[in-house]
Amino acid sequence: MTEREITRPVDLARGHRLNPEAVGWSRSPVHRTRIAGWGRTKRWEYWGIVTDRFVVGLTVAGLDYLANCAVYVLDRRTGVATTRSGIRPLHRPRFGDDPGDGTLHASAGVGAGRVGIEVDDDDEGRTSIRVQARGLQVSLEVERAGHDSLAVVVPWSERRFQYTLKDLANPVTGTVTLDGTTHDLGNGWAVLDRGRGRWRYATTWNWGAGSGVVDGSTRAIQVGGKWTDGTGSTENGILVDGRMHKLGEDLRWSYDLTDPAGAWRVRGERLDATLTPFHLRRDITELGVLAVKTHQAFGVWSGTGVLDDGSQVSLDGLVGWAEQSRNRW
Image 1: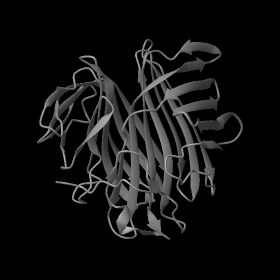
Image 2: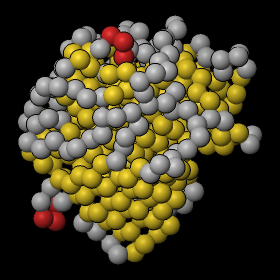
Image 3: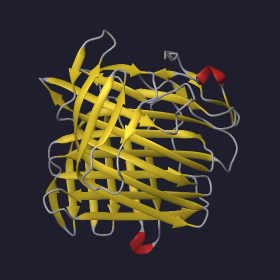
Image 4: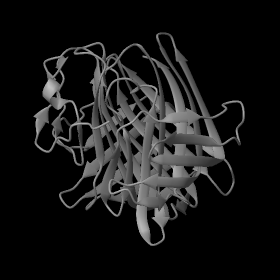
């Protein structure tokens, strides 16, 4: 399947309805994501980091009727996971709607349960991230200049649609401070997931990402499923030395949520990749009308992919995750 590649700036929505000219994919942010209306609009910035020492996930989400700031840290040496999350009802964080604008300062929760997250982009392709929470501070510097990302608009209908941007294989440095003790972040990669759209109430998705250096070449994979199936749009691609190779087909996922050590396999005509987990995170949130149930396996990818010119590349050794998430929101 061939999807339309968008190369010029375009508005995602006309009021609260999808702009048909926005449907397609791009190698860099070109969508202006302002959406009018209230009630079903979802906006978020998620950063996922995997290094040889830590796993870090941080989220700022605005769901119209509430805001959420959350951070997750896994110390791979000790196996200890730390989670902090704050909610702020009837609050809408100020997300950027210009192409590529990720600067964001937000907080949610009260007292000891407050979580603050600050994200600042500069003009030279760097992103600084600071997280403050009870007994936990994170300080990150992400280098983002010089490679393709993968932005896709997924159309369910003219009233329900999603813009997603995945930016992979970003070198990251920094520190994690746990209960007053500061640790070096270690060597690894950061991935950005930016979302802007108007969603159905109940949705299930798969998402997987991996980054690394193979045979002297910087490579990454981005794969998704379920939520995009049958729409004509996919969020699948292989990044090699800064160039994104778009995969247009719906991929086949196989995994067993009852087996924490079980492999996650993703296959298609141009991809056969398997994630072998070293840690499985289960996250369950029940807040009345809002419910999220996520199984996220962190691990190491292996397998092969086929690029646009037909050549085959190894994906062995990429580090990242694969997940299933069921949402009512």
